[in-house]
Image 1: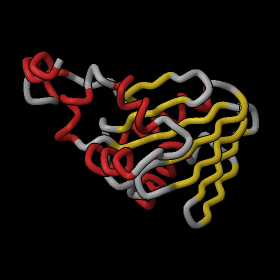
Image 2: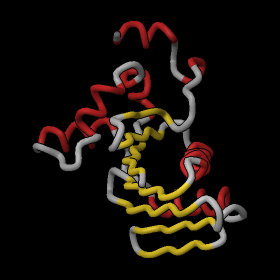
Image 3: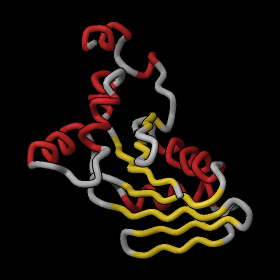
Amino acid sequence: MRTYKIFHIKKAYQPFVLGREKMLQEILGRDNMQSNQDHNEMTYVCEKIDEEFIKQSLERKLSRLFSHNEQDMHKLLLEHPLKGSIQMKFEPYCVHVWCKGSHMLDLDLFAGFSDSSDCYMAFQQEEASFGWLKPIKVGSIHSFTEILDFA
């Protein structure tokens, strides 16, 4: 089973975060927030998760792929007869995801998220890996020099 934590990075902070993802993972990727400062940093850099918007977006994108779809308050379960299942739990600033089965599940899920915004970032717990769910186009941020100025 693979577990992820998905955050919606504020568009204004995307240039700042670009290239510093590892540092952000050290703060946001932990199982528990260690201090109030960690929580404050999370709320400063991340948008609140819009649970209904995400559920609707995933429903639109993934409904034809998944045979079973169950929604509860703050939870979502998607099952595919061959690939496996995806379980999600929604928190104010984070979506916890558990994928059991094929790695194709992860790709389907990430495609569903990336259709709604280019600001989602995922941290995989087991391998300490991370990435933007939709590649950032340099033209989508103010300028490439902004990235260089923050480095």
